[in-house]
Image (cartoon, rainbow, N blue to C red; front, side, top):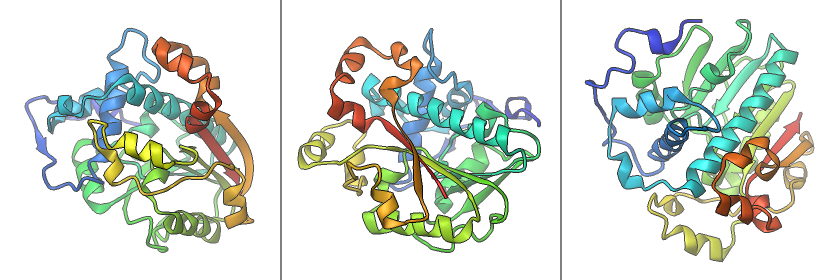
Length: 283
C-alpha cells in the first residue's frame, strides 16, 4: 500500500486548506486530530501518529486557540492506541475482514494499523468532514470514504455485510443522543452478519461534569449530547444481539505511564477510571 506521506503534495506546508465552513460538531474532528499531533511531538509519544502532525500543517486553522491540555491529548492518544490494538488483532484473525471507522474524522487509523492487504476499510463521517478528509487524507487502495449521518439508518448500505466486520468508534458516542445511539446499535446488527463493535465510553455524564465541560477551552459541551451509561451491559439491554466481551479502563494500559503524573494519580479514583474506558461487543 502506498504511504500517504510519499504522495505528491502530501505534507506540503505551503498549502493551507480552510475549515471555515465546518459546524462546531464537525470541528470536533480537528480537536482529536490536534491531540494526536501534540502526542506525536513528545519525546516519548503514546501513539506516535506523525501523520496527524502533517495534516495539522495542511489546515488553515488556529489550533493553538484550542488550548489542548494533557487531560485531552493523553486520553485521545491512549484510546486510539488501545482501539488500534483491537482492530489489529481482529484483522490478523480475519484477513478477509471489513473495518468500519465510525466518525472517522481525520484519523489515519489504517496507516497506523497496516492491516492485511485483503482487508477493506471504510471511513464513515458527515459529508463536510469527508470532503475535508478527501482533501488532506486521500484514500489508499484499501480505503473508501462514506459520507453519511449515523442517525440515518441507511448509513451502512454501501458497506459489505457478509464478511467479518470490525466497527470502531473513537470519540463518537458522546455526540450521539441516546435514541441515535440505540439506533446505531440496531443498524449495526441489522446490516452486518457478524463481527465486533469497539468504542471509547465516558460513563455516565452527570450535571457536575456537564457544567465543568462548559469551561473547557475547546467547548465540546455544546455538542456533547449523550448522558452516557454507567453499566457496560446497558447496550445488551437495548440490543440483545450485542454481547459484552471487554470492559477495559485506559488506566490499565501500559502506556498510561507516559501520561503526566497528575493524570495518573487521578486515574486511581474509580469514578475517573470509568470515564476512560474501552467497551467491546460481539454480535
